[in-house]
Picture 1 (cartoon, helix red, strand yellow):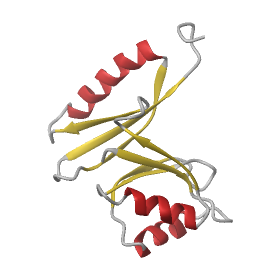
Picture 2: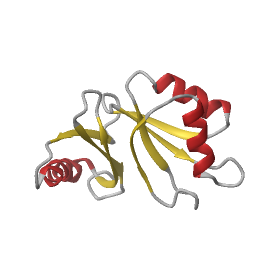
Picture 3: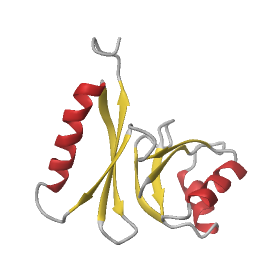
Length: 136
């Protein structure tokens, strides 16, 4: 789960089921999912199995979806934590990111939980820049 797709699932009318059907028909596996207000103009956020990203872009482009793609190695907005299945694991991940965000003028928008390629639990934490005294 090193990349994240953020899609506005509008295919006139907004329809998450239709988007998921197109992903299924392309034999793509969703490894992690999240989002909010997905049929009210918000983003449906997901990651696919490693190696399926190019095909996912093809499917989204074929059907005219507007999307943003983030790679944890290229975009500071996306941080990925590997989590142990123990109490406090997500908190530790988020606490570290929150501290980093203070210095970078970012706040957390959302979190996607899923499975990484090796079957471990992964959390994708997406942060966006906000206007602050530090970055104005």
